[in-house]
Length: 401
Length: 128
Image 1 (cartoon, each protein chain N blue to C red):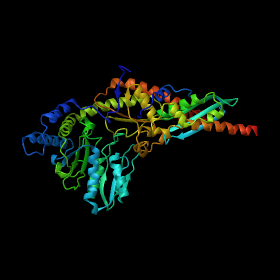
Image 2 (tube, chains in turn orange, yellow):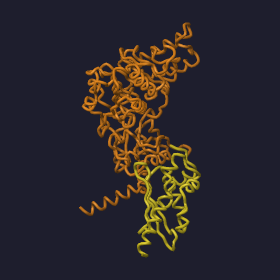
Image 3 (cartoon, one colour):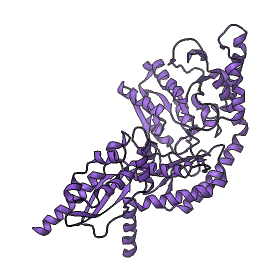
Image 4 (tube, rainbow over the protein chains, first blue to last red):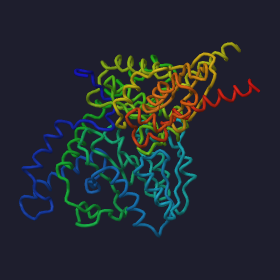
């Protein structure tokens, strides 16, 4: 196993920290270690650094810095939005709307709220994972207090028509939240132009540190803090600020804004080449997600007739790291809710591979990846009852013709 | 990905007895794509012994290793002996399986038993 080629195709799970980001963070562990809330000199640099980071994050999404607060994860930010809004506005209504392919940090909260008596509408998506604005329009009633629709899906990469959706919310004066954890840093986001009232983003998704995230909250929207204590972050999130992580998030946001088109363009080109190469080499390979409206670094395919964990294990033996939406690879032993929402039958959901690119991705690796996946697909299909059944059906069809 | 034993990895990497026996005397199928695992066992019986056994498996690493192990355990055994192979024994022979794989992927013995039952049912018909 020494000197084996290692290819990470799972950068959405984790990517290495940008070295420039790390350099910015380091002094805030030891040198400028002060507490930003201190009244004395030691707190000054950390406090100023946090405000710089807030400016940088705000600038990435076209927001004003004072409307951005820091959290420790996108999940936490999503919890602050939904729980915080429900608690603050209970009297106004009991109905919430989201898409059926939201992240679990949205979906699981909604499930809990349903048990508490709230009404939840999960909007369907089309075969590419798109929400239809008409469905949103039809779902709204006079009790609707929140609409939460992700900017892009982390698994299949599909980008939602946020402007169209938010316009419907705006017309009816309903707060519109978008979970942009997968999208921020990769596609242009502007809370003003796009009519977004609340936006979640995560630093680790664009080469910032893990445990760094932010929430944009438009002025006038009331949220109840979910972590109560001191009055850090406008009183919306108590606890001493994680200064190095916030500084890292700010630097990552700055770099992402400056280099977004170049970064996205480079990875989209590799992704498209990889997609073509795989489709050509592996028969019965199905693309999941939208053919065009998708994140630049995301590819998701289903290898028909085989199961994802077996694929993942074989690919790992070849030094290629991927993830899958199969039930065997999930802790809950359930296949991907996203693939099921786009209408993929169970056998195709089981054979899905999520391939996400990052800083180490190179077009030079495409022939090796293609060769390996192609061989593995043949090997696993040869032992698959579904594949043998398919061959028999093909034979019958051919003889009928 | 779960932590698999060396034995599981060995069977997953080099699965034995893949395929379908020709003109099988018994066929046993278990599972479905919804749960993520499917197995089809085919057997050839001679003088009350499992002369040949093969399988086709759609499933995770555990399911493939289980199928391979069951085929090895069953080959050459009398039908009565083979009927006594349990899923638990298969897991033990594999050096254990992760807890969450015990139920969904450990179906090999069931598929084998179904193939034996299928053979026995056919025998009854031809004898009667």
